[in-house]
Length: 275
Image (tube, rainbow, N blue to C red; front, side, top):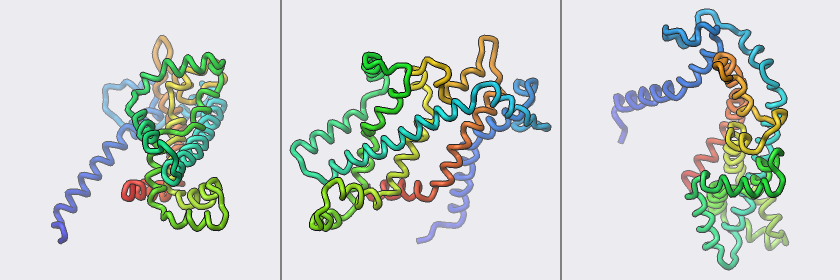
């Protein structure tokens, strides 16, 4: 039974209003990045200035070593995405396709770690990395990724369980090992889910502020999120330059989203419906 046309129109208007509300912070950031210093705190409410100050962008990029910070951030985010995707898929394969004693108990123990707030484990983890002598290096921000993520292990396990068992059995009859089945059968069929995991991990590492703040003490190793703090001084903040740098920092994420949009949406849909 079809819904009345006015209900469909009302639904579309509601979605449009929510979309505008969601975009408003980004538009405010974009507008502020184009304002002159005196316009930032002007009492007149104006989203975009009448005369955009495009010079804010080269000034912002020259204010901090932006290229170095961008390379540091890209290095950490890329390796984190690779590490979490590979490790989580391997562990998820074990939970979904292999039978071993205590598998279900270990899986529920893994799920229980999702209930722990990050603040609870922050200090013990820092002590461990300090004991290892890793503080002041990129290793605390990268190495844990290669142990997987509990949430993404759960997500991929649910996706792997939707793939027919007959495919794995046929590969075993052909003499394939479990590692071969994971690499040649499961990974190619799970591309949308793996893309979702990689994209979420990359975005999380790209925007991470607390991790670099805790473990990096050399300003040549700072990431972009940490470098943005240099626009804030004891005597105030260069808000227009800060917003310009933030816009440039956001562009790679937006580009990545558009490049992987189709695969990403497909992955979310499949894991949501079949998981």
